[in-house]
Structures are given as structure tokens and as C-alpha cells.
Image 1 (cartoon, rainbow, N blue to C red):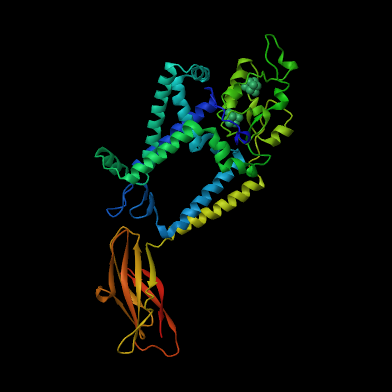
Image 2: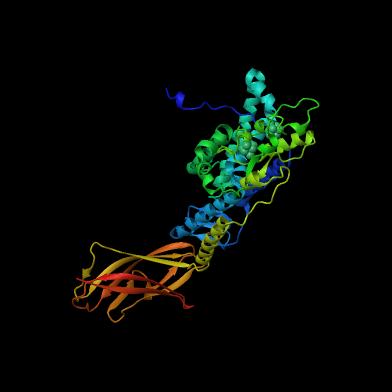
Length: 462
Ligand code: SF4
Ligand code: SF4
């Protein structure tokens, strides 16, 4: 019924290509995957009270560890700052170099590349895969099964690496060996594994074209000086098939071999101009350069260039250096530097102790037999340091207000490292002032080194 509104998914068979960009992408894939796989093995000594995995989101303590940086749930705004910074960096890089993130570093691109490599290993390059899919013989099923087994193994391994950012990696492997994985960890491994299998194995270019919002709004970050993958119309047209003895002086340099199309992982023809689907992977550049080389023509019929150069550079064979320093670059730099400074300053000035106080409201106050008024509070103190700490709690208005911590002698409290400690405290107004409904009392936690941490409580009076 709805089929008229949707274009059927056309299966793509991207062809392998050799060239500088392909080699760069291979090295980058290797580097990025190594970072992803091996980062959980990095250790950072935080003492006995905290895990020693350098990068860890610990759900037991709800703390995010990144080497010496620790972000507690109360400090989620740092995370917001880091996310805003990452988004701005992405926009900044896009405004200069176009969709390099999509083409070279995005998870979807990297994993799809690996899955295509596996497909190619078992089923051969483009033509063999097309033939195999047409024949559907016994060999077809054999090769497809091998491909899918490898895809599933890679997907499950991806899920396993993912959960090792949330659990100590060595403990995790011990749990696996002893068959003691919890259902939640197993669920995450299977969930991430299934998503990887689906996205890199089947959805592929559809994720970039239909699911990723970034493809839709990237054009807002482009300007005439942004690097894009572009076909040199003036040089390539009129395109013509090559026949023995053709003179390139009287025709365009494009021989319409469609090599740039068959290597494209999203299946577009870059000769039709810049398109939303293009992830700027540059593989069509390698493919076309190889063709140009065969015909002794200058490389760069398809190349990274800016619209400004394409429209104004009269020399069809040279690439003018793009203008990187433009007003937009400075705007981004100023905003990024400001957020960086704020985040770094915030992280440096972070307090190792956080206090919060909550009043018991039922009843709001109690009238004692000697006429004094008592309010009860729940004091939460987070010790973010890695040491056990002792503090003495005092209250302002000591002439009017008496402070008592339940079960703690002399109002001295001991805080366990990397933990939240809860205390019940009583504030009692001995001679409550007349005609006053409430009193703001400052509570001060002090240690022997004269470090002070303050909070305030409202003492309600009848
Ligand atoms: S057109 Fe070229 S740069 Fe764009 S996705 Fe296809 S191969 Fe990559
Ligand atoms: S690879 Fe180059 S020569 Fe071949 S069709 Fe594409 S642009 Fe033309």
C-alpha cells in the first residue's frame, strides 16, 4: 500500500579500490579500532578506594573516570560542557574540511568498512558478489554463512568491548570465563552486538542517508571555502567513452568508465554534483586518479576542493590552497576556547567534598518541654577524594542554636573515601526569638587543615 512512497533498497556492491586515500583510511581504521579496543586496558592508579581502569563509567559508584578527571552524578554539567564542546568541534571541522568525520572516523563508516572487507574476503570483489547473488547455488549459501558467522563474531566482540567501558575489563573476562555474567551485562553485549550487525551488515548507507540527522544539517556549516569532494565539470565534460586513439585535447577527460560510481559506498555518482548522501570518504578520488594515471592525464579530475576555487580558479589542473582563516573560523575558535577555558577552570576548581541538606517536613518542627524548638535534617556529604576524612560540624548563631549529629560524638564525622555518607542532624533553638518564623543557619564542615565547606539550613520556628 505504501510502497509507492518508498524507494526499494538497492543492494550495493562497492568495489575495492587502491590509492592514497584508501591507505589512509585503512591506517585510520586500524588506529581508531585500536583505541576503541585497547583503551579499557589502560590503568591509572587512584589508590585502593577507586578502580584503577583509566577510562571507566562505574555504575556502582555512578562516577565517570577519565585518567585524573572524575565526574560525579552531581557534576553532570561537566559532561554537558564536554558534549557541547565535542559538537562545536565537529561543526568547526566540518566548516573547514567538510564531512571528514563521516568519511573517516564515524563508527558507522569504520564498522561498515570492516564488514565489507569480510564480505569481500569470503565472496570476492564486486563482480564475484554480483554473480554469486544471481546464482544462489550451494556455494552461495556456504559463503554467505561464513560471512555472517564472521559478522556476528565481530558484532559480539564490539558489544563486549563496549561493556568493558562500564565494568573493569579484567573482572569482566573473569566473569565470562566463570560463566557468571549478569543478565544486564549479557543484555548489553547482545544489544550492542545486534545493533552493530544490523547497521554495518544491512542498513549501511541508509544509516547515513535516512537515520543520521547530521547529514541533514551539515549544509548549514558549509560555505564556499569548505573542502568538498568535487568533480571538475569544466575539465571532465563533455564526457565520452574512450576509443583507441582518442585525443583528449578535443574532449572532456572523463571517459565515463563509472569507476567512481562502483567504488562509492553510498552508490552515488559524484559527477552529478555535491549530494546529501556523499560522506566525503574520497574513494571516488582514488578510483578516478587510477584511471587518469592509466591515460597519462593529470590526476585530480575528482578531488577535494572548495566551491570558491572551482568557480574562480581558471587553471583546471592546479589546486589553490583553500582559505581556512575566514570569519566563521574565528567565531568557532572564540566559542570553543571560551567553553574549553570554563570546563578546565571548573575541573581545576572542583571541591573534593560536596554537601547537601534536606529538612524533614513531617513535622516541620517539634516544641520541646523546655520551650525550645527542634528541626531535623538529613545531611549528605560526598567525599570525592580517595582518603578517609574527618570533619567537625559547626552551626552559626551558636548563642541561639544548638547542633547535634545523631550517634556522632562531639559532632565529628568520618567520611569514607569515594562515598556518600548520610547523617541525621538536629538544630535546636534554645530561646526562639519572638515574631520570627524562620532562621537561616550556616553549617560549616571543617577539617584539621582548615579546609571549610559550607551549606545552609532553614530553621523553622512556630
Ligand atoms: S561520492 Fe565519493 S566521496 Fe562521496 S561517498 Fe561516494 S565515494 Fe565517497
Ligand atoms: S572515474 Fe573518473 S573518468 Fe571514470 S567516470 Fe568517474 S570521473 Fe569519469
